Length: 206
Image: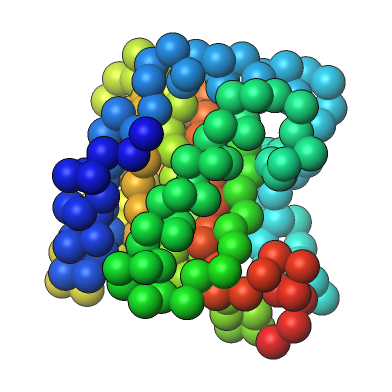
């Protein structure tokens, strides 16, 4: 279940500031289970090196981005992954009904940053395929300490918001906002995704 109180706060802050930090979006037990699922997928070769750009402009560049990803959808056999997708679907629909964002679908993946990797400043809304409206990151870092790094820096014009990647925390922000993943000194886990204004099957269209 999604807290109505937290949902209303998310709606207000997304409208006012462009982002919202939602602590305890999932339980610590679910965090541990998702980390296990991601670790098993990584060991079995299901994760691929993440790139930058999309379609014809896609490229791999470890000097810009160091994470490995596994896309998630409803073909996934794990019940907890499916429950998370259901929860994001409810959140997307609730935001859409209230904020009139034209949201039609979402895409999401596991992300693992190995030690000493990062993702330089960027925006999620591609110029050649501008269908990402709201970005979300669910952090899965159990027992995170400040010296582990891996924070997300969100650039908001005259200020920078540094978001700690605490286990169970969901960060929502507008996809046109500049941000970066700071150096991770310990392996960093998350589920990252985007709410779209077009059906996933049609996002190859301009």
